[in-house]
Amino acid sequence: MDEQHTVFLIGGGTGGDEQAVFTLRSSETACHLTCSYRDKVIEAEEEDYFEALFQIRQQLELDRLLPFCYGASGNIYPEGTVIEMSRGLIACKVKMGQLPQKSDLVNIFDDGYDVVPTFVRIQQEFWDEWLASLPS
Image (cartoon, rainbow, N blue to C red; front, side, top):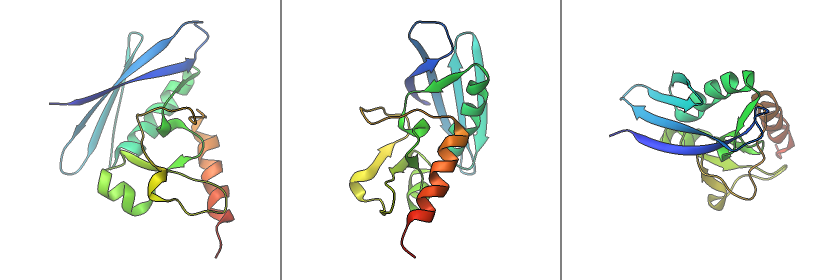
């Protein structure tokens, strides 16, 4: 059975609460993610779910929509071993100059008081800045 997550969408200019349903399906070699919202469906297939969400977010941005979940939060990014163990479902909250701790791990489809939804480009820029902030 496929796993599903319902995520609020912000933006889009509709003035109301919108939601998307993300459906996860995996094989041994790929992670397939489907996003259903309004009367639309976006699909992505990547090596991990974080990257698939990344691809879907780029399409949602065309409708000026941002998912309200950790996977779309500016200070969240997957790290090597974490992404391999979880197929990209778990990512790390990162803080400038600090390595993530076990308590910083979150499910990319969960939400919380500290979610700061951003566009894909901004999340990538934050990640690059964070990497540069780490001690050598």
